[in-house]
Amino acid sequence: MSWQLQLHHFKEAQAIGLPGHPEGLGLKTIGEYVESVEEYLEKKDIGNPVLVGHSMGGAIAIEYALGHPDLEGLVLVGTGARLRVRQDLMARIMQDYGDASKSIARMSVSPSCSEILVERIAQEILKVRAEVTYGDFEACNRFDRMNDVEKIASRTLILCGADDQLTPPNYSKYLHQKIRNSRLHIIARAGHSVMLEKHREFNVVLEGFSDSL
Image 1: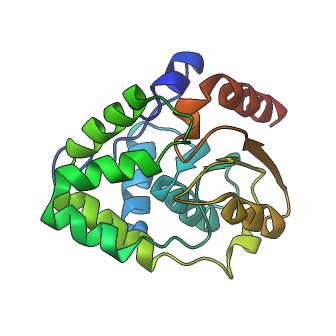
Image 2: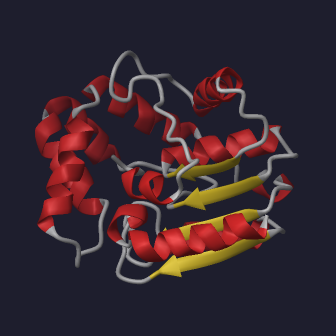
């Protein structure tokens, strides 16, 4: 669901379903998720992709890029070199997942976003087991590549929404400052789910980057 508007636009693109999303058990660390991505790419015989990652997926993409300096291209969306999750929100996931999903969904969009999209995001969150979502947030809390992202050699596009509450634009600005071969694009009136909220502008920027590789 997160990438449906990009899959429709980019005909050769593939969206990787991570373990536990929505079925099965989730993994415990960003490194383990990287291994699952590597297994997917090997199975699909995709040698050198342009890797696009959003939020925790961005952490996975950063970790992948650090281990694969010949990566064709890297796109980091609404993410950061270090990710921290509010402890009160994590506690609510295990106490009242339905209520927590609504809070996460509301924080995932701009204040100007429609309630229809907020509800859809909340419904998608609930398709993943509470234990998996909690584990993902724990993995994000442990992720810290603040001192390593400057080693990324791939050409990189950094995208974020100006109204992002979960990974504010300063996170993206830091990535742009540290990654030498990078460009930054901040999209107005969009929040954390920028690829859904402002998909037309997002797709144009992403297409321009892809064509430049």
